[in-house]
Image 1: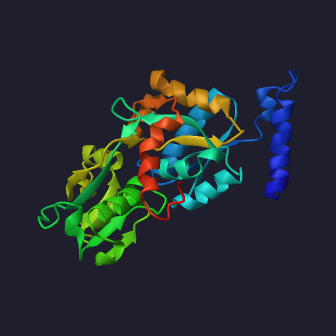
Image 2 (image 1 turned 180 degrees about the vertical axis):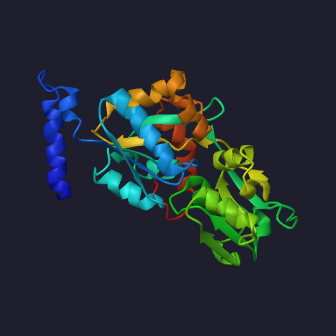
Length: 285
């Protein structure tokens, strides 16, 4: 089925939903499609199966998670409305804010905020900050990642360095992969999501034990769950916002190392927007 026909069918179902004789059960054949990337730390297949079942029970619709390793394929599917929602980074959200609407922001340690970290191989005393990366290898997460690319570009610039001043920079495609690359010495340092590193550290993972934090950014809005503009999966939003007060959701939130989800406004991501405005080539005006 082409994207055009699929969109038309979903639009028709949305219109029919306004009529009283169309029940939630009748619409269950159209699953909620939610895009995710490697932001999930738990065993993805088993964890997402449990989360899908939890959301199905609370939305009345089947849930299908669409998993991609890189951010760009998820963003593309979201923008052409092949996804009903996606968990993305704040950087692509501010780039496409006119085409996306916020559904929920995760709560980490009581706030919908996180930091970017610069980590080094444990004991690598020569790297104490961004200015020390000249002639060294830097691992980053993804070109659409705030903490795994945008922050790195901005901080290198502030330190008087360009990417060509590195011996090498590479994308590991996943924050956990960044930590693993630094821990085993494939990179001297890594630009990483602080929430991911803290969660790995709390769980005693080797990649966290083999690295250490040398710099922390200011606070940014936590990577949000968004939907295409004009398409508001209200039942999904309500289910996410209720998770923090639902005992049945506690094992899922514990697996994510989150407290729950909260409503968010575009202003939460203003600091990322301002950062992107200062970095050439981001597409943020």
